Image 1 (cartoon, rainbow, N blue to C red):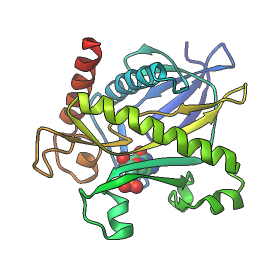
Image 2 (image 1 turned 90 degrees about the vertical axis):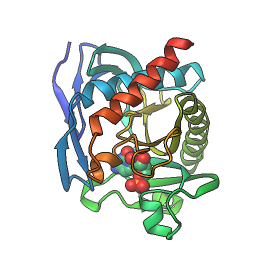
Image 3 (image 1 turned 30 degrees about the vertical axis):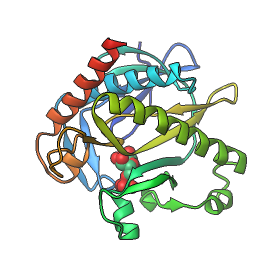
Image 4 (image 1 turned 90 degrees about the horizontal axis):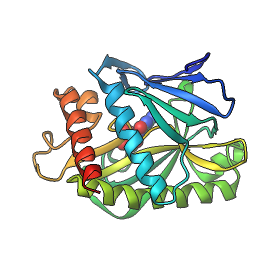
Length: 243
Ligand code: C5P
């Protein structure tokens, strides 16, 4: 049962439960982009992202990635381990898109020779700036050992997710991860993995706009946003049911 609301973010609400080590995440249909300058809703997004994230966390657990996921308790609700979220967003990129195009001038779609890992400081007032490891140390956001562990975990997760999505005929362009520390001091993959937090391109479609299956459809007003999320969910469920 949901208890007290302890946090409301742009796409999720976090509630306490009877157990201090367990929290309940409610996935909302609300969508924001450009640090909440653009706002809207995507029909059934909460339930779709909750289902997608649940499947992906379960899959990663089978690959020995420690995650905060416990179980899905309703279409748009997920029980998770209570963690202290690190104020860092860890982005992994396989193909150039989004802010990397703007920062470097490299053309969208350029395949990277090796995955690029970036850290962003989670701070809405500052607009989530890109941080170097020296900035992370300066602000004491994580120890150098934790940063090394985050990088390694993010790269391992990238390999597993790339494999998984290729089975769904989806190309994992880039994605954002968040991590938290549980009551025992363990680093757990947290937050969500969904079309809100990943760029996914349809491998079967070469049209640069039609192939977009993620939140870029909302960011760029491309239409058919909910249909793209629905298709991602259907492909994931099809792959899971084959296993
Ligand atoms: O905007 P940018 O190109 O830096 O985004 C890289 C990846 O991280 C994209 O998949 C985007 O959806 C995700 N991201 C996110 N939350 C943010 C910023 C980026 O999920 N606050």
